[in-house]
Amino acid sequence: MSECLNNRGASRLSWGLWLLLGLAAAGREAVALEALVSAEYLGDASGRFENTTPLAAYCQRWSADCREMRAMQLPITYDRTTIKNSGDVRDHFYVQLPSARTLDVFNSTTGESYRLNFEFLGVSQQVQGTPELRVNPVWTQFIKGGCTYRRTFGYASRPYATHYLWLVRDPKSPAGCYSIHDAMSTGYTVKTSVSNMGIAYRLTMPEPSRMKPGFYTGSLTYSIGPGGDFDFGNGVSAINGNSLTLNFELDVQHAFVFEFPPGSDRAVLEPPGGWSAWLGGRGTPQRLQRDVPFRLWSTGPFKVYKLCQQYQGSGCAIRSSDNHSVPVSIALSLPGGIQHQGKPVQRLELPTGRAAALAFESVTPVLNRPGQLHFTVGPEDVKAMLGHPGSRYEGLVTVVFDAEL
Image 1: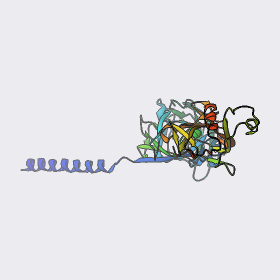
Image 2: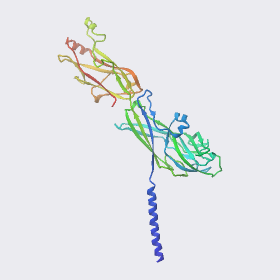
Image 3: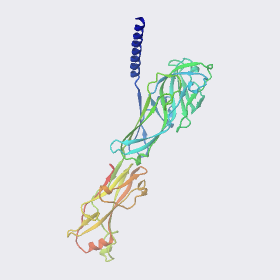
Image 4: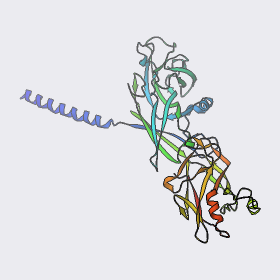
C-alpha cells in the first residue's frame, strides 16, 4: 500500500513540475526592441540629406563627437557581472557590435527601391555599480580587441555611474571590445547595471538629387545575446530584449519650379533677325524660329514631353487658314547640372506623348538657372509656307514638365 501511494505521489509531482516549467517557458516571450533612423531632403541647395534621427544621450556631454559622427540611442539595458583578469575576455566588460549591412528602402507610393549601407562606428553606455569609480570596469583608458578608447566620465557620488565612449577599429567587421583595469586583484567580481546605450554610426545613402520624391522605409533586425549580432559577453542577466530592429525612414521632397516671363504662352516664329532680309529680296529664310527662355529650380529627377493640338507624323504641326500644315520642331536646353543619359542637355528634341517622355536627372541642385525652349520650322517647310502668301499659321503645343514621375 505504501509503495503504491509513493509511486502515485511521484507521478503527480512530476506532472506538476512539467506544468510549472511549461508555464515559465510560456512567460518568457521574446522581446523585440526597436529604434528609428531617419533623414530628410527638402530640396535645399546643399544636395545632402539632413539627419533627423534623435541623438544619443552621450551627445549632451560630448557634443563634438556627435558633430563628427552621427549618433543615436539604443534601448538595450542589462545587468553585468565582470571578473578581473579572467582567462576569458568575455568575463571582462565586453561589447561586440554587428558587422556592416546593406538594406533596401522602398518608396511607399511607387515601390521603387534604393540601397543603403549601415555601419557601427562607436559605442557608449552608462555602467552603474560600486560607489568607487576605480572599481568600475569601464573606468579605464585601456581598451583591447576591436575598439579604441575615446572618452570616459564618472560620478563619484550618486548615481555612482561611469559613461564611456569607444570607437570601432573596423566598422565593416567589428571584433569584440573589452576593458582592462588594474584597480583590484585578480578574480575580483563587480556587478553593474548597464543602460543609456548609444552608438556612433555611418549611413551611406544615394544622393537625394538622384532619388524620386516620396517617403522611403526599410529595416534591419539584429539578434542580441551570446553569439548574436550584439554580444555582451558572459555574466549578463536581466537583458530587456533578444532582438533589435532599426527602422529606416527617408523623406525626399524636391524643389521643382519653372518660371516663364510674361507673354511666353505665345511664340511668334520668325526668321533669324526678322523678315527684313526676305522683304528686301535677299532670299528665302533658312528657318523660322522662336526661343522661349525660362528660369528653373530643380533638385531631383523629372521627365519632359510634348502634346499637340495638331499632329503631323509623330510630331506637332501648325496649320494655315487654307488647311496647309507644316511640322514644328520643339527642342529643350537645360542649365548645367541637369543631364539626360549622362550628357548635357542642349537643343534636345522633345518626343510626343507621356509614354515617350525623356528622363532628366539633377546631378547637382539647380536653383534659378536659365533654360530655353526652341521652336523651329525647317528650310523646306518654310519654302512650302511661302507658297501660301497672306496665310496665318497657328497651332497649340503643350510642353509637360513632370516631376511626379
